[in-house]
Image (cartoon, rainbow, N blue to C red; front, side, top):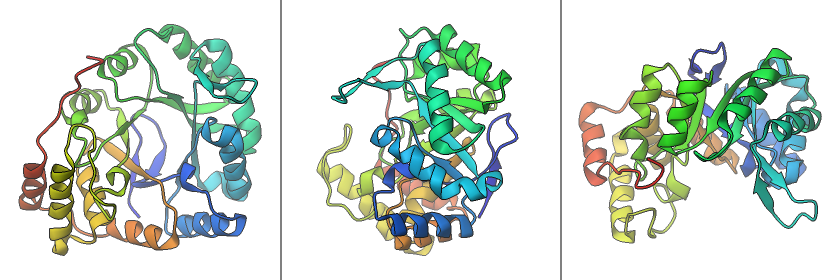
Length: 297
């Protein structure tokens, strides 16, 4: 497994991160897949208080508490479940972030969170207040570092300007190259790492039937998937799709939802393959033009 330093932090994260929302098997299956991921060198596990109303954090706390000093745990806050459980509301207030952190610490069975992330955000948020909450948690030793999860350029620019974020989690794949337009260069300039998600585009680049995705038609999606499949020398479809993502220097880790041991073995093995050549990258890039954010400029 390869590792990278996340932004200006001292967090050495595996280049493949485990997206814990995918852990929906039996207790035994979940234990097996997390243990195998750890054995393969994956040390970065990402969850959120939103997932299963906190039950996902509890699961991660149970599975990783005996390995606490060997893993990097990331979680997120900002979405507040309603009292009646009917849904959630966006709440990036200082009061809520501080309270949410305490609950996450309990569920995760830990005294500190390695990376605490704002789970969304808009330009109309009380951004200064939100940053105050993260900075206070850091001063208190309850979190080591913080970041945001956002694809919105206007929000990202504000946090780059005003805060000490070390990472931005954002969707990026061959079928979603929007971060290339502006965000990658901005973050790289400020030594802030990207945590990518959606690297296989909901499986459309690997094994799912083609369907419309973002602004792409089903036919265009199929063409991108074919380009991935045809690079046989580059590895399996999943390996190639993720190596395309990891080829971007600013991407510290590709966070992947892994549901089976077979998927895990395949993805982890791809890290040991050579980088895609310039020619291979050109072939892939030629099937999907760069896209642009039409909103949140």
